[in-house]
Image 1 (cartoon, rainbow, N blue to C red):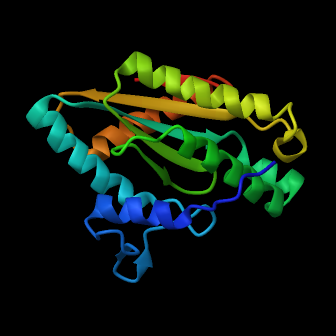
Image 2: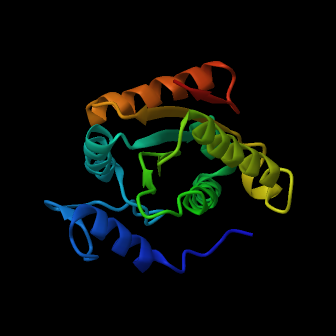
Length: 195
């Protein structure tokens, strides 16, 4: 069944802490930094969080990964099954993503229709690939389990970029993850690719 987001305030508090708002609802000008469907932080939060991690990577040699996750053919899925079904599918995926980002510096961000980014702190490329493949497999298993009617054969493509002690701009890291996602989609979808 679709999980209920009982801890939306916890998500808002975490994002507020990451943004330096002390848990208050985070805003950027008049634009909220939360996705209205999932309650997850929205894309503007991604760059700010990456900048913090980049600073730690440069200073202390920290490592982290960015996984861009996309439901393959989300527009066709919505056309076939309706917008309500698409929204339930995205809520299900958002919950799966959140369950894989449990540590303090981990973060899940909604980056547009059918797309999420997951930042995992202190992981190497092998660990990042394992986490991404675990997400892909969990989503695929749900599409044939009790939630089969909800997911109706939907699959995920995931692109992973890892950083280990490098000093790159946030946009360059996000672009690396996007390129990996493009390669996963080009492989026919339902794939995980790391750069």
